[in-house]
Length: 117
Image (cartoon, rainbow, N blue to C red; front, side, top):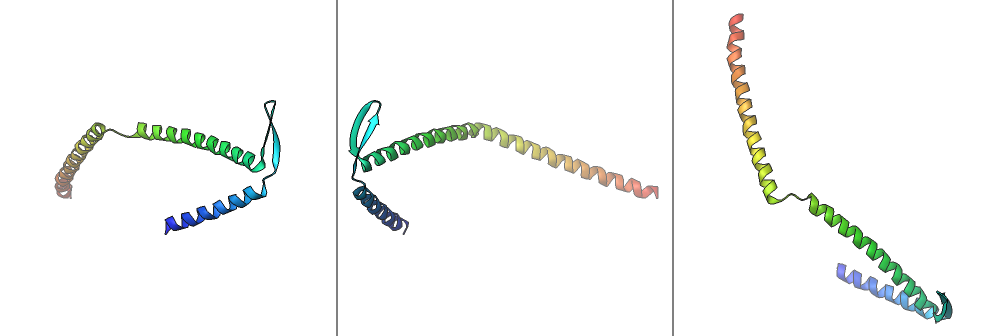
């Protein structure tokens, strides 16, 4: 369905461009760095649009490259990931041991408190 709507939209845009081209066939003189060039108005407009599209593409492409570079530098290698996972496992074991020691200490202290009463 998406492909059909894209095709229909493309056909509509092509028809609009064709009508635009037929309505702007007048010849204009363009002064380009001291040289005078005669060309149809529609051709001049399309050339300007093409130059603008190329500039936008180049700017967005450089931004895309910068984003990819940042993404690659922020990725962690598998070795680093294994190292961090090992550290996490070690800390979890240590945490469990400390919890067990704390639990043992509180159970040892409770009988002492009850004997004081």
